[in-house]
Amino acid sequence: MSPSVCPVPKSTEKGKKSMLFSRRHRSRENGSQSGLLRGLCPAPRYVIWCLGVSCGLLWLSLWPAWLFAEAHGSVRGVVLHAGQGVAAHRIMLSRMGPHQEVQRTPGQTDTQGAFLFEHLETGQEYTYYVGIRYEEQLYRSDTVVLEQGQQVSGVVIALAEQSGQNTEAATAPSPIRITNHLIGIAFQENQLVVREVLHIVNLASTPYRGPGKAPGSPIVSLYLPLPQNYYNLSSLQGLAAEHVHTHASGVYYSAPLAPGAHRVMYTYALPLQSKVSTILLPRVLETTVLDVLVEDTQLEATSDLPFGGRVSFESLPFVQFRGTALEARSRSWVQLLRRTGPTPLLRIAAYGFVICLVCLGIGAPFYEQWHNRGIPDTPRPLPFARRQDLRTSKQRLLQRIVRLDKQREAGAIAEGEYQQRRQASKMQLLALEQQLRSKLVQETRK
Image 1: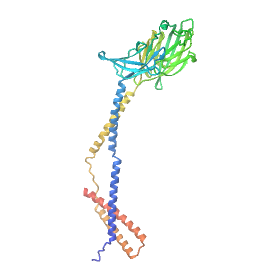
Image 2 (image 1 turned 90 degrees about the vertical axis):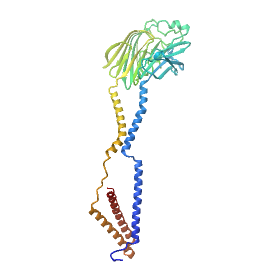
Image 3 (image 1 turned 60 degrees about the vertical axis):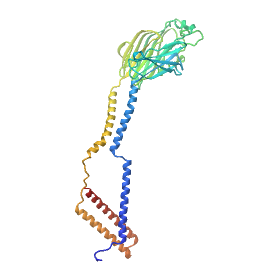
Image 4 (image 1 turned 180 degrees about the vertical axis):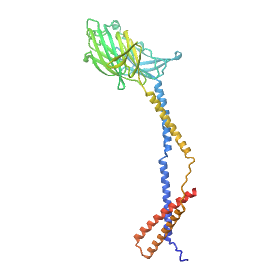
């Protein structure tokens, strides 16, 4: 054996093998961890793609519901008998369609005598009316034609009194007249606020007790009908509060009405439908003048009453509709539509934003793949001088480990110091080995 060649002890070889084994084991662990993280944390392009597809599916699922809700209408009303709702009674909705075809839909009134028919076809070719058979008599409402998305409320079916004893008295003309009826409609806090002012005159010389009221019978001298679904009735003036009774169909006054003129005023609220709101104004008394004022800043209004121009009331502009010499047991209607302003533009912008998200989510992965198609991985080669320095440092570390082993065998170094210095040298050797191997792999791929 040549004196210049020093044999490497077995302990050194075992150390090198253990270092290589531990390095391979760590690389496998790192690879498994990186694969696990890749599975749990997808690339941003797949996140964008999933987001776009989700938005597209959501839009496709909600679009038929929006279309169905906007294309259909409904009819809501009440059945009254002697001013009271007819509860739990069978009714029938009839639809006259094209070519005189008739479709009938059965229904029933609730505990207040109200009814509701939803999901009805709209258009000028469809005509609806509600019918009821009560005490062997047939009654029906006025015909209704629904526009797209229109929600008609306030349909009233008044059942006449069939008692032979009271027929003559019921048909006797009433001495009560409405000389002036003012209805003001404004939009406040996402609801319609309605104020009614009535000038009522009792032309008789004695207090009026109501039609066909015998002595000792309940008194209902005045009935003021209100639109269907009204709420928050307040500020009632002109009538004794202890004799005022409210019902789903209107207001009743259970005291004799004195001769002369009376001024009655009250306020209530109505819900505003998403499309067109139709307010039916039934009358039970003859009315000399009826004025309907609709706020012109936030509402668009049409009516079967003649247009009376524009007026200003309480510093607000109103559209006026006026009717004169209106008969009892008739009605008028007012259709209201909220001024939407830029809402359609916002809706179009929202639809466009959703469509852009869908296109972005679908196209982003393909664009990223196309953009990165010709960009190769070009690592920088390690300079020759640097490689030589790394190899020289590696050789010095191996020689240091060999000297430590010899000093330990000769007893020239303590066991604790030996383990500490040898471990430090092994860590430095492992770092150099990894650096050299990574550079070698990159040069091989190149």
